[in-house]
Length: 116
Image (cartoon, rainbow, N blue to C red; front, side, top):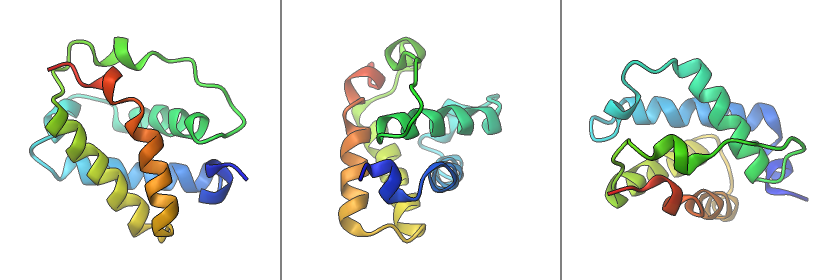
């Protein structure tokens, strides 16, 4: 069974992604990356990426390196964001082992997102 299925599918990933962004927006160290961004649209885009990355049925065709090229994201900021993902997953009642597997998938894009 894929991580996508173990997490509960599209609705569960969408809910975790919404909480993930709520966590980010409450954190002044990373919230500014999303100033002026259409957050419902951003949430949908990120959920679509996560669904695909976690083994869901739909392909994702974006380019994270291109999207983040001029954002100036540091390793520390990426680590903070990963912490918000971990928190959203834990808050949704996801088992610890599954949280860590999901975070490990998210960590695979660090090199595409971190630019400073």
